[in-house]
Image 1 (cartoon, rainbow, N blue to C red):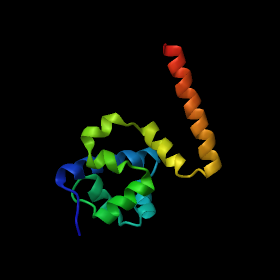
Image 2 (cartoon, one colour):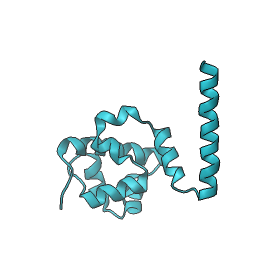
Image 3 (tube, rainbow, N blue to C red):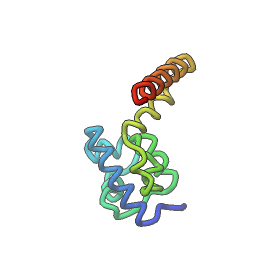
Image 4 (tube, one colour):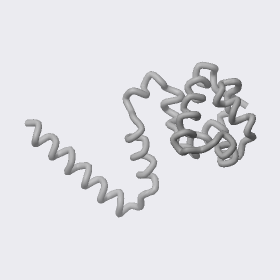
Length: 117
Protein backbone atom coordinates (compact mmCIF):
# COMPACT_ATOMS: atom_id res chain seq x y z
CA UNK A 1 0.00 0.00 0.00
CA UNK A 2 1.10 3.53 -0.72
CA UNK A 3 1.34 6.02 2.13
CA UNK A 4 1.92 9.75 2.37
CA UNK A 5 5.40 11.23 2.30
CA UNK A 6 6.75 12.42 5.65
CA UNK A 7 6.19 16.12 4.79
CA UNK A 8 2.58 15.40 3.89
CA UNK A 9 2.22 13.22 6.99
CA UNK A 10 3.13 16.18 9.23
CA UNK A 11 0.58 18.37 7.50
CA UNK A 12 -2.01 15.59 7.71
CA UNK A 13 -1.31 14.90 11.41
CA UNK A 14 -1.92 18.57 12.22
CA UNK A 15 -5.13 18.57 10.14
CA UNK A 16 -6.35 15.39 11.86
CA UNK A 17 -5.75 16.78 15.34
CA UNK A 18 -7.40 20.11 14.45
CA UNK A 19 -10.46 18.36 12.93
CA UNK A 20 -10.80 16.04 15.94
CA UNK A 21 -10.70 18.95 18.37
CA UNK A 22 -13.14 20.98 16.27
CA UNK A 23 -15.60 18.08 16.55
CA UNK A 24 -14.91 17.83 20.32
CA UNK A 25 -13.79 14.20 20.01
CA UNK A 26 -11.35 12.38 22.23
CA UNK A 27 -8.71 10.32 20.47
CA UNK A 28 -10.57 7.17 21.52
CA UNK A 29 -13.91 8.41 20.20
CA UNK A 30 -12.28 9.60 16.99
CA UNK A 31 -10.59 6.24 16.49
CA UNK A 32 -13.92 4.48 17.01
CA UNK A 33 -15.65 6.80 14.52
CA UNK A 34 -12.92 6.11 11.96
CA UNK A 35 -12.87 2.37 12.72
CA UNK A 36 -9.18 2.57 13.64
CA UNK A 37 -7.30 1.43 16.70
CA UNK A 38 -6.67 4.10 19.32
CA UNK A 39 -2.92 3.52 19.10
CA UNK A 40 -2.98 4.02 15.31
CA UNK A 41 -5.02 7.22 15.64
CA UNK A 42 -2.56 8.53 18.26
CA UNK A 43 0.41 7.58 16.04
CA UNK A 44 -1.18 9.46 13.11
CA UNK A 45 -1.57 12.58 15.26
CA UNK A 46 2.00 12.29 16.53
CA UNK A 47 3.26 11.81 12.95
CA UNK A 48 4.78 8.46 13.90
CA UNK A 49 3.18 6.84 10.87
CA UNK A 50 1.35 7.72 7.69
CA UNK A 51 -2.08 6.54 6.62
CA UNK A 52 -2.57 4.41 3.56
CA UNK A 53 -4.22 6.18 0.64
CA UNK A 54 -7.47 4.37 1.51
CA UNK A 55 -7.33 5.46 5.17
CA UNK A 56 -6.35 8.99 4.14
CA UNK A 57 -9.45 9.24 1.94
CA UNK A 58 -11.70 7.73 4.63
CA UNK A 59 -10.39 10.03 7.37
CA UNK A 60 -10.67 13.14 5.20
CA UNK A 61 -14.24 12.32 4.19
CA UNK A 62 -15.36 11.38 7.70
CA UNK A 63 -13.84 14.39 9.49
CA UNK A 64 -14.32 16.94 6.66
CA UNK A 65 -10.57 17.46 6.24
CA UNK A 66 -9.54 19.04 2.94
CA UNK A 67 -7.41 16.48 1.12
CA UNK A 68 -6.22 19.27 -1.16
CA UNK A 69 -4.85 21.24 1.79
CA UNK A 70 -2.92 18.15 2.93
CA UNK A 71 -1.54 17.29 -0.50
CA UNK A 72 -1.02 20.84 -1.82
CA UNK A 73 -0.28 22.87 1.34
CA UNK A 74 1.13 25.76 -0.67
CA UNK A 75 -2.37 26.30 -2.09
CA UNK A 76 -4.15 26.05 1.28
CA UNK A 77 -4.04 29.81 1.82
CA UNK A 78 -6.26 30.17 -1.26
CA UNK A 79 -9.07 28.40 0.55
CA UNK A 80 -10.49 28.45 4.04
CA UNK A 81 -12.72 26.41 6.30
CA UNK A 82 -15.86 28.36 5.32
CA UNK A 83 -15.26 27.51 1.67
CA UNK A 84 -14.77 23.82 2.48
CA UNK A 85 -17.84 23.77 4.73
CA UNK A 86 -19.88 25.24 1.90
CA UNK A 87 -18.60 22.57 -0.49
CA UNK A 88 -19.51 19.87 2.02
CA UNK A 89 -23.02 21.29 2.43
CA UNK A 90 -23.50 21.60 -1.33
CA UNK A 91 -22.96 17.87 -1.70
CA UNK A 92 -25.96 17.32 0.60
CA UNK A 93 -28.35 19.53 -1.40
CA UNK A 94 -30.92 18.35 -3.92
CA UNK A 95 -31.31 19.98 -7.36
CA UNK A 96 -34.00 22.41 -6.20
CA UNK A 97 -31.87 23.64 -3.30
CA UNK A 98 -28.85 24.02 -5.60
CA UNK A 99 -30.89 26.24 -7.95
CA UNK A 100 -31.89 28.47 -5.03
CA UNK A 101 -28.29 28.68 -3.83
CA UNK A 102 -27.07 29.50 -7.35
CA UNK A 103 -29.60 32.31 -7.66
CA UNK A 104 -28.64 33.63 -4.22
CA UNK A 105 -24.91 33.55 -4.98
CA UNK A 106 -25.48 35.26 -8.33
CA UNK A 107 -27.51 38.01 -6.64
CA UNK A 108 -24.83 38.50 -3.94
CA UNK A 109 -22.06 38.82 -6.52
CA UNK A 110 -24.13 41.17 -8.65
CA UNK A 111 -24.93 43.35 -5.63
CA UNK A 112 -21.25 43.47 -4.63
CA UNK A 113 -20.24 44.49 -8.16
CA UNK A 114 -22.90 47.21 -8.26
CA UNK A 115 -21.80 48.72 -4.93
CA UNK A 116 -18.10 48.71 -5.86
CA UNK A 117 -18.60 50.65 -9.11
